[in-house]
Length: 300
Length: 300
Image 1 (tube, helix red, strand yellow):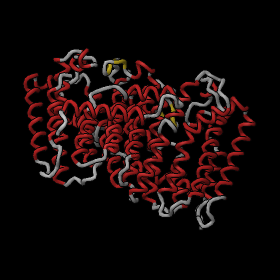
Image 2 (cartoon, chains in turn blue, yellow):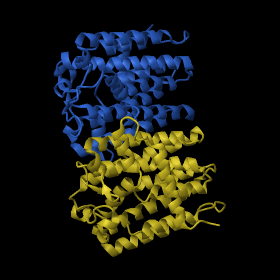
Image 3 (cartoon, one colour):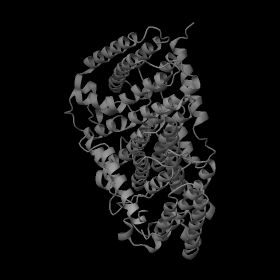
Image 4 (cartoon, chains in turn purple, green):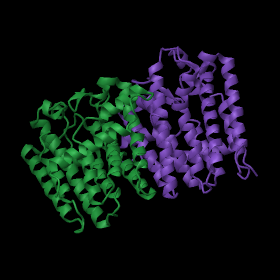
């Protein structure tokens, strides 16, 4: 019997939470404050969308749960580090994240920067520690490093920096920026799951998974922009209306609310079709559709 | 005929320089400013001590030069990222490094932080790209990640942060801090060279190399502290007298100048003895003695 999506999500969230608690350096270890800041930033926060993708795809490719725990935690560490650094005064200068003070608000700027810095090697160490053949582990390292690089997350962040106050961005430029800033790590999560398993994904399946990853990555950002306009701060756990206030170009500012909603829905259909195109003999594919639905129809 | 040390150093420096020029993302690629900042920070700076260690040990273990180029560049990227972040206003707030403006002085704080962030995954991608069996590549990733983590460089940096203005540090505490902050990456450079070769290092040799790495790591920092007192800004390429001014505990402040010089000399002897203890059949070991000499007798 298949577990209901809501329960499956909860189980995954609990697994990654436990993996973080057990595998991140303990607070009792020197330097304590740095370890506290790292744990504060990773444990107890967020929807864990990237881990959900790792678990869902990993289960399709028959991965050991312990390997998925470490892989999901690795992605989440990279995601967390990016949030810590994004929130710093020299970047977005935000003090609220996941409904609690941002890391620098709680630990000071210097420790927050170091916590972000230190989460990167920690993430790669988690991948190294998976019990997988070396060939697979090096593939995981490559996927995560590439997605975090200037061709992925850091690159998108740099483009974002350069366009504040410049509403003249085209929709194609906005799309490129987000495909790097947010999309790259979401897509990497999908592929990490595929490469962490005992079954080897076919080239055809990898292409389908890339299409899926791109579509949900795009949808994720559009929905984020929509929620920034229609959501409220308490439910979001971060400051609502911030992008609009900062004169940042968004899907809503460029397309309008209705068109943005349509574009998100379109991505849902593309994602669903990509999943249907995966090899027939694979089990558990419906989770990917459910995640797409979860991402696109969420309210926070 | 053996190449003179000075010429060998120059050749290694040129190799890593060329590797950086060829392998770091080109400035013409989007996001240009971020790529410029990364290249500015890595290319054309420093003594390249870590690359020298990678090349010297790698040559002993019969490594392909191209694999050493990528490995040396990877370590140098991590070292460079740490300098960029250390120089930021929320850390040491320095504006001069290697005789030129620090990265944030030249590119602004946000871009500098991102350049540091982006050099980390780039370093791991360089290791992934070495033409070595996956088992060896994953070992390289593990060594570099561990040395950069809270049990290495980031941890030492966090301890350093917590002791500014606190002269009550003991010599053992100072030693622990530096063994993490600077020593870990120097030791890792030694071991990376050993694991990048076609010859497999024996357990005995790895132990000897660790002793060597620890000794030169310690000596490196002692000499740095000595130069901060006796050197001048122009020759150092960074602000002299800064540590003493900042009330930071140093080997000189804790031991006095003469005792500090003795301790450095002691480390040279330990390093030399460790090298002599390496397996008899290995060639090129004298380079390691020369590097120890270079580190300990340098004037900048």
